[in-house]
Image (cartoon, rainbow, N blue to C red):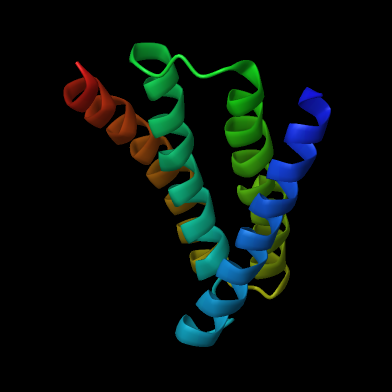
Length: 125
């Protein structure tokens, strides 16, 4: 049954990722992968909120956990797309943009996860 919850969450997360990428490109342009950057950072924050909530307060059933973390977050966050975008920038000869994108994605995602963990520790303690 958990496979069904993962599949359902993955479908929803993927649709959210697709929509976010489309709207980011429309609003901010497609020359830089703003959508993927936002998705990676916000997805890291969301998974931090969920993980710390489950650890400290929310005794959710396994089906809810796999639906939210593996399904929705897994379908939404896109480090495979991150890699493709980075290589695309490099292949276009945009070394500075590629480096800014790679460092920004990794550092901001880790910081977002850390901030979410701290936030939830304070909020739920």
